[in-house]
Length: 245
Image (cartoon, rainbow, N blue to C red; front, side, top):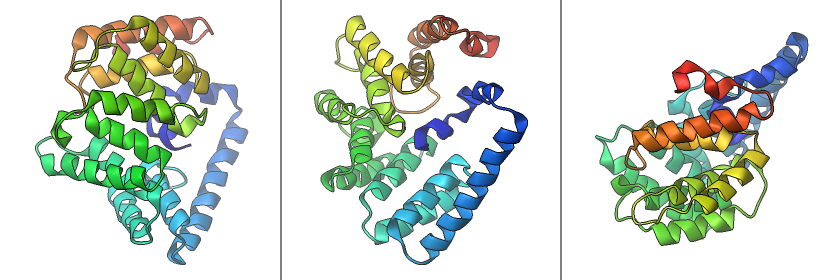
């Protein structure tokens, strides 16, 4: 649920597979889940506070609100919930202005705590900070180790582990280009989601959409073309639209 809804603009075509009434029913379920989660969060339930922060981050059952997401993540952190440290780190990494470098530095501290507390999401967050120059000294080797550990799961919310591995092996920093490994990890991520998803997300990373790695327009364009070709195999031409190319 987590990362999937975060990039909801890329999966909107899935609604074509559902009737309007069924889709509306899902929305009602989300609203009810939000209210139930909020009640638990107000009762100082650390897991519910973390889940509520996610809901505000993704816009699940409620209007997206990054400030509220941060506030509830902090409440969960007060109760020492490991994944909440990673969530707040991700908020800084993917929503911060690069002018405020301290947010990226803080993200590494938070992600380190999360990983040390056993959070798998924390490992992905920490790996992300280790490949982001704004967070401090880069360590691509350690990042790969952390991502490979996290990629052993097939949980969709951890899909960024194989995606980042594919990005790294596409050529980032001092990581040699290894197309075979990159394609292997992209394929794993696509299995967890749907065809073309991994390459599309990698394209956005290289486009400079987020300030994690050095932008590379050529690689971004190549990866989006791959996303188009992969998705077309299953009759989806979403990534082939002009705004993505």
